[in-house]
Length: 156
Image: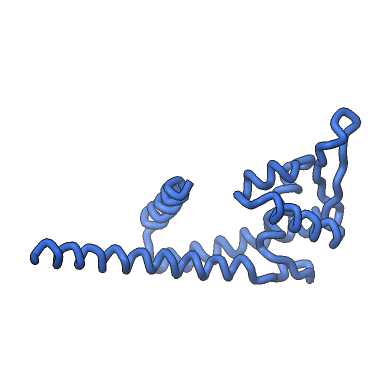
């Protein structure tokens, strides 16, 4: 009976930890889905703004490359690209050498929004780190990031 009690105790401890991870993932997912203004007055989701910034950072990137970078399906990336294009943030271009491959570029409007996003993220990340430092040491924050990185590798 002692082994069953030990197993139950270990399960309960692990389950509490897993529950915290689930709560974090659910809250972060909701945070990502919430459209927001990054400083230009235009409302856009976190998924869309990060795709836009990826295009801005790597002019000529393809949809296939975005699917790998964001670990999203082709369909999801296609929808994001279509939405960004419809809103005038990006445009598509093919080359004479390979008309099948479509390269993505930001428009002037898209570039301005990408720059505003980076400024906003810089401010928000700094604010988050300052708040975390009230409760955690820099080493604890580094350890958390290391664990998140390793956990992502486990999920691959």
